[in-house]
Length: 105
Image 1: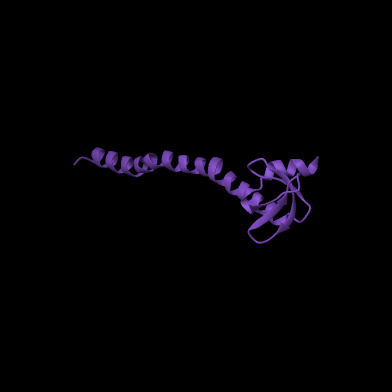
Image 2: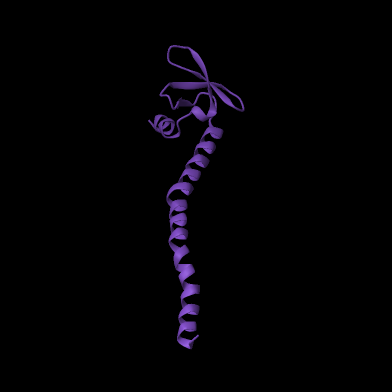
């Protein structure tokens, strides 16, 4: 084997393998920062908001039902709607954005 062939083989193998994996690594990093991380932040904000809710707070559920919290426990809320009916909802059924907007108004 000639020295030129050895130089070509050695220089191409190290950088070539890195160059092949670099686009895959970049796709994973972009996917994490634009998809996974914001979703995790949104879930964390929703959990914090739901934990801070108390009696007499007005809420809107994800199904669009407006009401006032009458009772709460570890996993659910008892919401009283305008007609006086009371409905029990799971804590995950509270809409973060809509409830925040309702309480600001």
